[in-house]
Length: 344
Image 1 (cartoon, rainbow, N blue to C red):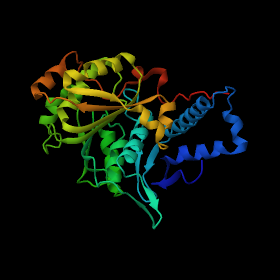
Image 2 (image 1 turned 30 degrees about the vertical axis):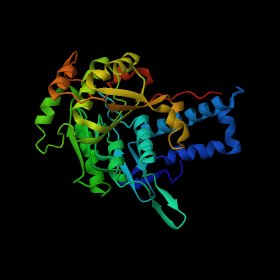
Image 3 (image 1 turned 60 degrees about the horizontal axis):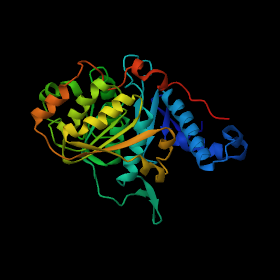
Image 4 (image 1 turned 135 degrees about the vertical axis):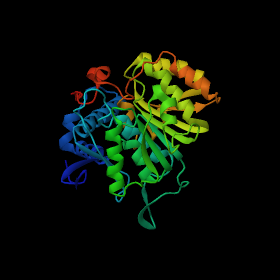
């Protein structure tokens, strides 16, 4: 690994995305490295997708095993979070592939992807300033995605939320980036938000940062993983959104029953689910996600229901005390930390 993808921070190594992916692509493009990613199939398009998936799998395996990981938004702007892969009771201790993917998509889609202009060596943007408005990340885990939205200037306020078991680590990562001036303490805040205890957590939020129907953008990654939490998840989205809110979920289908339930029950909460995964194909910073079977979903608010109705429907069939991230048992053998084999 070259020095460009790693830097020093508090005497620890930091592995940065997308540097690690870029470097692996460059290494494999060299003639001496092509033999490691050779396929006998005559289908060039499938070969390229398999190559991309293998590269991404290797890169994310390395990222998952690094105590400190970061996202480099521009040469001057980056965020860093600490992972805790030793935690067994939940999987909010590491940054999942879908978090990197949705961060890249949001940067490209909403105009803050930094590119140098011919007349200036500094990165520039031509899109509307802070187009995401007030943003909410649900099931934030280590906080990578929400911190990228805050540091990039895509949102003017970002509230990162998690459940009881994860909130301390999330808050520590928010404070880490405040201390380095990557984000502002006035615009980037962590809060406890349990999907199965919405009323309690909203009521206990003394600063009213979780006031219902006030978020312009809501994002979440790998938040669909067990049927018992699908209705509470939809309840949370419906309660926090207003009629024009952008809602994006990025996930890998770990539990087919949960995914099917999301599609089936969304309309009960006034939401419509749209699969936008195909747009990733034409985005160079995101196309690797298709090879890793990532899904990009957009939820549209079709009808605003009464809060009492949203809460009641969210409680149906819920089980209290569940983490907003998958437990190690629910992830099973497909989880982070098991390196996928390359095709030969």
